[in-house]
Image (cartoon, rainbow, N blue to C red):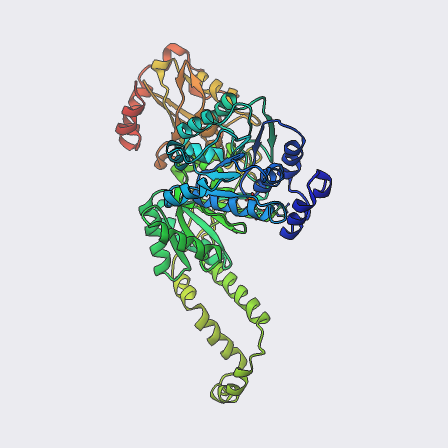
Length: 606
Ligand code: AMP
């Protein structure tokens, strides 16, 4: 591994690196710094935040900037004012022992006049949000004609925030001969198109896998009833007494509601969303940064500006609308060499979304059992006992009260004393969980497992795609938006399943074909994998949609007698006989009992 000394930095920069306590380069730095110091090549670096990318571009940039010339030589574009300030702060640190480097952050939501004054004094490096920079260019305050390096940081985030036009406009303003660097957590079509348009044969550097999440983040989920969502969140917080995490919600209302409930219930939590003023948001972020808050409940947009390295948990209270947002959320933990976990609260109907995310992240998501009341109380008590063991007791002030205390408690033996202290400390937990029912995940409930223990999910530790599982004869009925009028018969169904799945044959049960849609049963452990596998496929140019059908018919069923290899009995019938009577009359029954009945029939029929 190459070290900083061998990279070709000047003594001033090396001194700054040393002062910052960076002992060896992080992977993104190992790859990007030699490229930056070695020549004029354009670079695309796919790296999450927290991987050390600011230093990867910042250290060589500071070294390359000529402080003797009073014009703007580099432009860094990034999505938020907080990131602007952070980059500016980091670059200032890197430049501590070099010449008088002038760096200015310009971003929206702050006085433009001050920024104009700052620019007029002359700056070497501008760190800007795209919208504000466009304003400043429009007013003739930002001059980019001498810019030789442009860095697009968190490019995917800038595009998510709708800055594409502004970025295009800005890149048209900077001289053609410049060098361009693009940093992004994910590679999307839009990013690739910016690269094609504005970059010159860029070298691509990937830290971790493309579009995958950071290596030291693990992913897990709780399968829950929608009504239990908040209770499960509380259980997570109670089960992890030292939790320090962000709870992501989808809307401002949901964010405020969840935060208010947590605060009312005595948790050390607060909300961060766009209905708060900038001052309020800054105050909440600061409280969270210095760990005066354990749980920050936030929307994706509001949390963008927050940069904290040592989060233990990211909790997806609501799954994001855009799967790539999941990568950003989960990338907020497991940073700077630490490990972290991203937990999603998922109800049955959302499982296919989770599977799409799982495929994108390219890591298995572990199903976690919802902690029982007993487990939570045990964990809390154990945590408290550990603190009790380690507490420092050298306060002189206590000594003088001890004789009185001893006298007052003289009637209590050691055990009674302990019980009382514990009761005092754990009132809330004991009250909450002593009488409260345990929460059972929908799968555990339906499979009849876990009678009353409240543990859910898979305890056998097997992979959740179920290919290595025993089949227990439980079948799930799935809905598919293809029917006889599409030329879709059991053979076609089996062919569709076989050609889109790998590994063991998927056991298929009863098949019921209707005119424009159908139902079929599949061994329960294969259902989710199959839904995901079929979700992006087409049949006769028609996009396939598969979902779990209603729960009533998902009852355990003895069998497993048909597999996709061995066609279902009904499919053995001659094609011309298939349509006779049976499916249509069954179709009526299903319409009555299926929640897809009227509504979804309409949705899926052509
Ligand atoms: P970034 O991805 O730029 O936000 O950096 C994440 C964190 O890693 C920041 O707190 C940096 O100060 C820290 N960092 C960057 N480079 C190194 C290094 N080589 N060794 C240790 N920490 C680093």
